[in-house]
Amino acid sequence: MKKKILAIMSVAFMIILSACGQSGIKNALSWELAGFTHTNQDNEQFGLKDLEGKVWVADFIFTNCEDVCMPMTANMKKLQQLAKEEGIEKIEFVSFSVDPAVDTPEVLKDYGSQYNADFSNWHFLTGYEQEEIEQYAMNNFKAIVKKPQTGDQVIHGTDFYLVDQEGKVMKYYTGLAEIPFDEIIKDIKALQ
Image 1 (cartoon, rainbow, N blue to C red):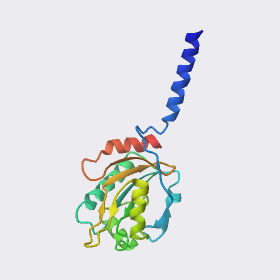
Image 2: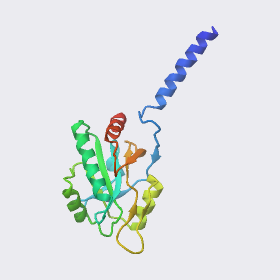
Image 3: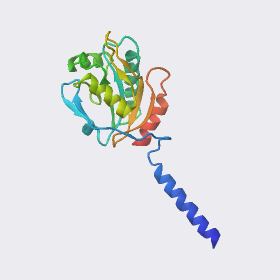
Image 4: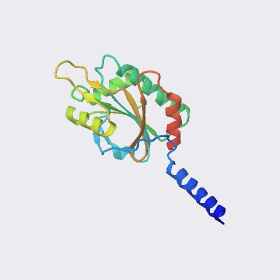
């Protein structure tokens, strides 16, 4: 009888454990994002509510960037293309400008066009104060964003952030070099 009870408890425990890992993301972070509404490259309001029920990938860039943003944006474009080739439909891409005083919607539209961004599911955001994006990046993505007092180059992180349908950051990956594209695609599919 003890063995039977032990077996039943073991099965129940395994079921509970498997239910806890439904996201399919190993070591998921589950950082909850605060709501936001900003302006996209089409000069339209766009925010967290528009992303409800969708998996999305975010990064932080600026159009005046002299080094890391160009390869990051090219890598995000490649990720967008790979997702399309894999038939992933409910996926969005969000690039937050870390230099909103310079990056108007028109400037962001031109910048995205240079990379052949598909604007149907890639949103370049601006329309906030510098201090606001610095605090939002740190408080929600644990990412540094800092515009120095002199010069026009903004200090910022170079990661891609995978966010689930409920607005929780599940994982982050390098967005600059040796991008783990296969892992990101696998993780996106695991969330869908």
